[in-house]
Each structure stands twice: as C-alpha cells, then as structure tokens.
Image 1: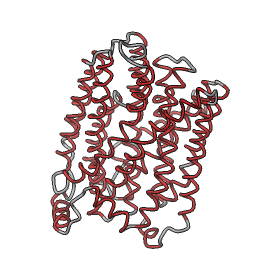
Image 2: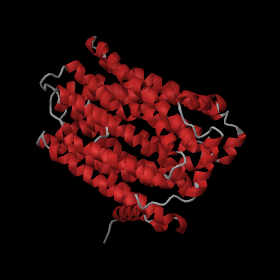
Image 3: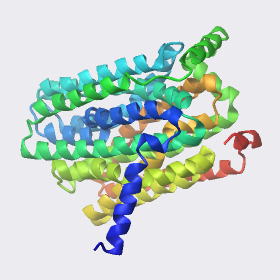
Image 4: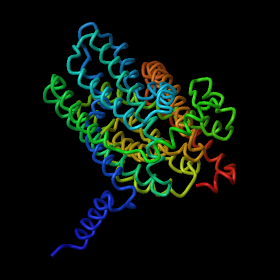
Length: 451
C-alpha cells in the first residue's frame, strides 16, 4: 500500500513526464516537436562541454601552475571563457543577415555540426600557456557558431508553434537542455577530479553525442518556409533584410519602446554578467573547491533547478507581456547577488550553493524571455532583426562585464573587501529591476492587446 505522499509524488511525476509526450500538443505540432525534443536530449551533451560555468572552472584549475601561465593572465582567461557565450552574441547580426532568405533548418544544422567539431578539437589542446590561448580561441569559435543557432532558431519556433503553445514548448526544450547540461557538468567534474587528463577522450565522446542530435534535428520541417522566404526577400528589397550594425542601431530609433526595454536589459544584464568570473575565482582561491564542487556551484545546481522552475515561468510568460515578466522574474537575480555577497563575507559554501539555486530560478525564466521576449515587439518578418539586436546588445555588455568584474574584484580583494564586490552587483541588478517596473505602466495598449 502506497503512502499518500508517495502516491502524490508518482502522480506528479507521471503528469510531468506525460506533459513532454507529443500527444500533449495539437496534432499539427507533434512531428516537429518530437524531432526537436529528441535532438535536445543529445545536443546539450556537446554544448555542456563548453558551457561557461563548467569551462571556467576547468580553465582555472587545469592551467593553475601550468608552464608559462601567469596567475593574473589565467584569471583574465577565466573572464574571457565566462564571457565567450555573450561576446559571441556580437556575431548575431551577421548570422541573421546570412540566414535571411535561406532555408533555416539546414542552415542551423550546419552550424551545429561545426560546433561539434570545435568541441572535439579541445581534446588535443596542450596544458601550457599556448594551450590556454588555443583553448580560449576554440571556445570563442564554438560559441560564435552556436550564436547562429540561437539567433536563427527563434524564427523556426515562431513559424512552427502558435503563441499559445510557444512558451510551453520552449519551456520543455529548455527543461530538457538544462537537465542534460547538468548531467554533462557533473560527469565532466567527476571525471576531471579522478583524472585531470580525462578531457582527452571525454570531449570527443560528448561531440559524438552532438553529431547524433544533429542527425535528428535535420529532419525538422519549417512550416511556411516558402512564405517566410518570400517575406524576407520582399523585406530585403525594401532594405529590411540588410541586417548590419547600422541597421540595428536604426531599429533603436524606429522602435523607441523596444529601445527603452533594451536599455534596462543592459543595466540589469551588466550586474548579472559581472558575477560569473569572480564567483569562479572565489570558489577556487577562497573556498578551495574541487572540480566537481566548483562545477556544482557554477553549473549543475542552477541547471537542475531550471526544470523545476521553467513550467511556472512559461505559464506566466504565456499570459503577460515580457516587460511585466521581467519585473517579476528579475527579483531572482537580485537575491542571488545578495546571497553571493553574504556567502563570501561569512565564508559559507552552503550559502554560495543557495545563490546557485537562486541563479537557477533566474536562468529558468531568462531562458524563456531570451528566446521569446522580442516576439512581443517584433513584426513576424522582422523577427530575426529584433532578436539580432537583442543578442548583439547582450554581446556588448558581455564583452565588458566579465573583464570589468575581474579588474574591479582584484583591488577590492587585495584591500580585504572582495566580498563587497557582489554587493556592487546587487545594487546594479536592483537598479535594472526598478527600470523594468517603471516600464510596466507604460506598455502601449496596442502591444498589450496582442499578448
């Protein structure tokens, strides 16, 4: 006889698993959803190998004391690796322009294959100063390629899934990706603790999983592909398809409300992006964590929290404009930065793990708003352009924040007040959150009615 609590658990688990089945969606959406879902069981194994938090820990520990590696240069390399996903976003306008008028799924597939090849190349990197440089370059190249996947994928989602289903489907994809990335982070951390040279065979194995995921993704069909291509070609003829930096800045002038939203995203995002590299440095230098302990804090715990939180965030995003969503969701990052500040001051790894839980809550909502939020502003034929602007601006702050963070953290740490660096992040995050809240009452009725 099952206890009531046990019955509730298995009932809830059954509902969760059933919610991923294609039969949970309208018939016309099932085939593409199934192909994408299965591909995202495998692609994250490859992507997890170059995930920012995981790779930052690997770089910090693997090259610590390596021949010719200067400690200060190593910490800035950690900043570079942490920043790579966001700096790579600066290439988004290029990918949006290259994909304009072309078939989207084959284009995405080729980018996935090239990313897998980069992951496999990491296995031959020597543990020297030159190897550190080579590894950093490979990671940047892989993240630039993956930026193309992220930028173009949003057009596939917009055309394949109606808005009523889109946030829930994106949430399911994000949940699967988060779990797989967490598993990959745990495996990589455990393997590196057992044998620091295990990356020689582990990374090619992860790349093979990515190749398998790509084979499934290639079977996805984009609904209305010809109609979309015609609209993009018409837009190109009128100048809208020529996506370049000048065109993106013009978009800020054309859509003032979106420009205002991007401004507060930049303020809020700056505080978030500054936290990563100093967290890695603190975990290694102050807490003396192992590979696995560090990766637990930077990667595994946040990613395991994401699948728990994503369903609630996706339901909220389906009902409200992204500005209202951000004004609620933003509290997670504000509290996470406060927890890091306290953890460093009182030297508590447990509180640092609590900060990781809060980051997971924030990443869960952020992954949805990141992929779908611009839909609340963009006309259908300019979807990639709005996404490219969003991603490019994130790349600009991503190119600044990690290096600014390390440059600011060093003198504070030498002065014995390194923990107060995270208080600075807390203040910046809070200011950004107040900006989102100030925009809530100014949402134009036309835009609100479309949500």
